[in-house]
Image 1 (spheres, one colour):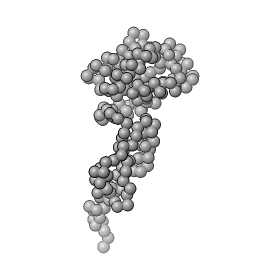
Image 2: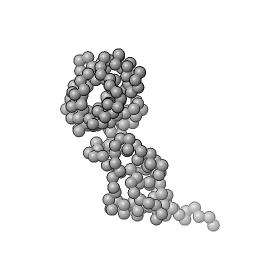
Image 3: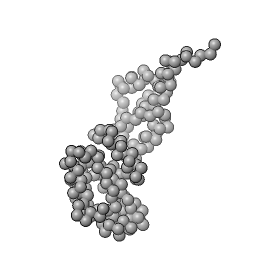
Image 4: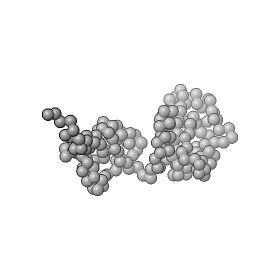
Length: 185
């Protein structure tokens, strides 16, 4: 709400210590204590995923949020940098909130910025690369052992790398296993 008695820093400090809390999701219109917010966010984000839906991106929405809450709304560009530097994952809408809460509840918290992508098509892999850049993630270099294992499953013509496109490997394996099953007389 309007943080009339408990502000974001108070909440984040509590959730940092609470062993039952695995993910923290914030809806932010504005804040009253920027330094306290950033300090608490930095501590919390080291231990648990923190998601923020920051509303009031446009000039008119920011004015409405400020009149509604009486808090500091600020320019969206400043929020973008502050959230990123605090380790908070910024989300854009309610649907993305649900998706990321589910993902973070199933996956361990990342300890770095390098990722490996496995996709069912080249196009999905390329879209995943775009998403990685949006969230300042880097593609990891695959080890020689991993490359060898993927090549063993893949057709000879397939280039292997990160992202890993499993469609050709799946198709190749099915053909090897069932190649003669549907042959015509």
